[in-house]
Amino acid sequence: MPEPVSAPTQSGPVVVTAVFVPRTGSFEAVTDVLSRAIARVHEEPGCLLYAIHRDPEDRIIMIEKWESTQLLDDHGTSAAVVQLNQDIDGLLAEPVVVTRLVPIPAGTPGQGQV
Picture 1 (tube, rainbow, N blue to C red):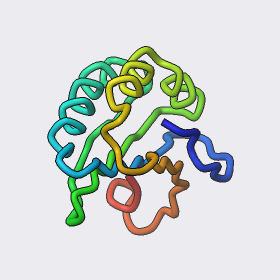
Picture 2 (cartoon, rainbow, N blue to C red; picture 1 turned 45 degrees about the horizontal axis):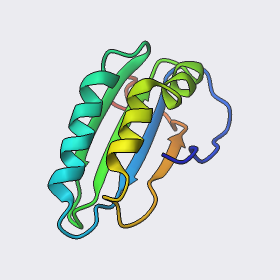
Picture 3 (cartoon, one colour; picture 1 turned 180 degrees about the vertical axis):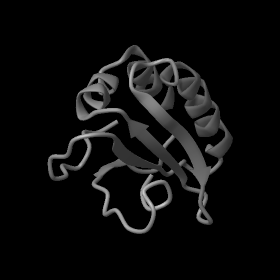
Picture 4 (cartoon, one colour; picture 1 turned 60 degrees about the horizontal axis):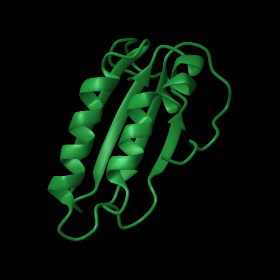
């Protein structure tokens, strides 16, 4: 996956999105690759959330939450990500877009941010 888009420095948990656009006919293959990776990533230090969702345009949106920027950065070079990149090669219509998000808290602490 490409390097995430830079966001302002933050402390505490880090939320990331990654958008995968499967080639025509490759949706199930991409989902299978991501599902295998998820099982491994859930075991990584600092992983609070690593989940995939399908949007109406058949893109796969991964939502991640990590305890810290350092643990997220460590994840980026993990064996699970290396394997994911190898397994997904040729299955996507365009490069993955990875974005680190910075919260704008609103409402109650438990409901106003991921």
